[in-house]
Length: 159
Image 1 (cartoon, rainbow, N blue to C red):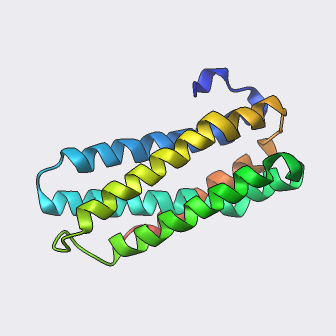
Image 2 (image 1 turned 90 degrees about the vertical axis):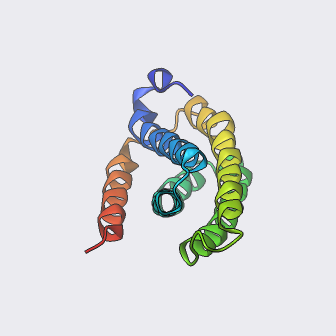
């Protein structure tokens, strides 16, 4: 999805989510290309943090807002997204609790990347265009999403 084509009423929120999607894709590519185990593990932990924060702002703010606006239109897509988040969170927990010494570690990160790629495609090809076509004004939740994201990222940083 091209950010330049997003109307002003949706631009800030959808741009934030699209930037998160882009960052996750980049991190998964870096993980795949990296040869050093310690560096791979660091990348995997970073992607887990980023995805946890992203899922939280969607689940706490974005999805409930859409469901409140037009439950009949967004309900099924949002339910599927929540199930996808639950699967991803399970893998994230496994990755965060393990290390590269776990023989399934790389496979778990790879599968997480595949889950996320599928989820991103559904959001960018189905959910976001629907938000735009329905002219859902997201400006009232933009600040809350940005603030929550920043708050979660700050609390995830090592002390």
